[in-house]
Length: 265
Image (cartoon, rainbow, N blue to C red):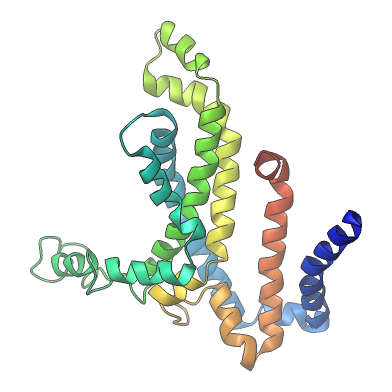
């Protein structure tokens, strides 16, 4: 009976994927994927998701180290705040980004004023920094939802890494930075790669926060998920073809990281 229930659950997950594969127009798949709209969305998605992944690694590594190795008051609250986007509805995340980084937001208005003509940072290129309805806004939204995946993966690796190696390196005269680069980082390097891949996959598939915060502008903010949504009525074959690309990426990430992340979790 247990096996029968498990089989029904697997079927529940498999049927939508089977329906998507059956719906695909395999004879015109390459034509659909190389359509100008599809290539433009794919190019923008790769640029934005890779940029968001880079930011996640650069910003997330010191944050994960702090959460794993540095005691300070309120650490549980800080960790909950950092991991909040994991459970926060993406649309709510987009609304929160609007409240903070739009021209009328908590920080966005001030940032726009100081970067326009006459402002303290008017020497920056462009006529004022504005995240909404821009490619930079897409990167910001994707970083917001992808960064927690990197932090939670690397923090777990730092917690499980044996700190005695660092202590031995210190007794041999190694400084903290040298010890981190040559000892700690080598221990957690596989988890850093796994966290970066997870963050990239999450950024690539982001929809709710992006469309809420950055909008859906062709060539500027229209990433692959947004293109799928837009083309579903007008060009369903192209929408299904792009959906297959996202499906293949997600499945590849899960299969590649099953031993590094999923089984450990």
